[in-house]
Length: 580
Image (spheres, rainbow, N blue to C red):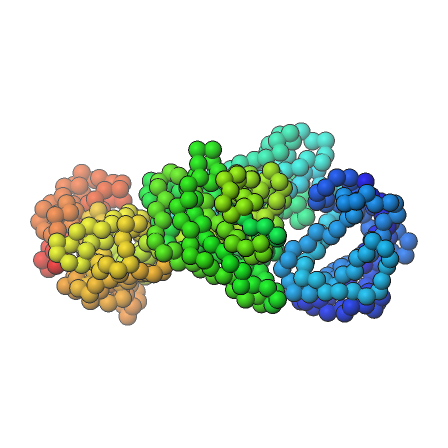
């Protein structure tokens, strides 16, 4: 145990970098002393978080100016003998900012002269007396691919400070694009329950949501949030709305550190790229490393090596977070319903400073490391209180963004959502099937489809199928799936369909606009809109059939004269499939 004297000074500032110079006495004018007293540092090796109340000789109240940052100055002096090495306190910080602080420390004497250091000390402001219940941490994914990453969960870590037997918690998840609520629920749990796990709804379209967890009663100090983005192609634990807190790696040794992900779907998840980032100042960078991918062992830890990249080098430092992408030399196929790990092998005894976000306490059974680059003993970050949430994102490039409209479901501006099948077929005869996927297409006509067995050098046709619309092939120009953002738009030109085989649909009240759409009316899916289809619709309309039925051409859940008229029009125009 070590005791010492602590003084803390605060000042509002508009500065975005440290600019107070290298004289401690010259830096203090204009700052408000808020703490002057004695603190006790617990014994033993480790990192400690100390709650320190304001007050003491010569202190005064301090309020942060609106929209400002805060300078923090502190001086600490031990008042008892040191029991080395554990008796010598150090300041915990993150290696993330060039000249982030100016610092002096000594075992012998005080000095007014400071030295720049590339760290960011951790300082938190809050109430002296906590609320009855605090939200300590929130756990979910920052980015999650649909359908591979679902079902997803939200973990909530609580601490009860009062004498109540029940805690009331509110959880919201709000779409950042349209402000609608995906979740808005309030519930009570026993005050003896420290951890809650909630199932999050499965989301089929990419969207950006903000999850907020709040204790009731409570205040903003004990409200935590986490941005949760549903993507078509990539995983990441890092909160996309939060900055990196520092750079992670090994100093004086080499090793590996990885993050674990789950493919919960019944499809193969193909990894084609790994997005990651580094934080280095201008004096470092260019450190060698490999991207590594492992399958999960039966114990849930990293197992067999699936991929190791060629030797890579971190970018030259520029004091900021720098994102890079490694395109795999070969696609790694992750089987359905399996766990896998993606991370780094540090090739030399120099810290590579891979981006992380602070997570306290870090989630269990997700992040692992080894202390050598060839060892098989994996250590859980959570066991060692290594509170680092890795910012690394495995991504597939075997997906295709398709924009299409269904004639019967489209009014010229918006479309009724429905499931659509897209096939990828070889461009050459006999047009063999290379992949098929079913996905929802939203009101804008956009759907995301995955084809894990395609490759970047083959030529393809894209084929659209729907339960009561006509099978439609893409134009007679070869298409590829060879980048991470491939797309195909059927709606912007008649020539995008093989044989110009689409209808033009306009909004009746705004006839100058519209788009091309896939013909409606092939109810029996025989490749032609004809009297047989019209007869099915007439029969269902006569029997007043409703619901999700193939004879409902306009998506209003009833077979009636409107559907019959649409079909009859396409029968009259002899609409049928056109394909090579």
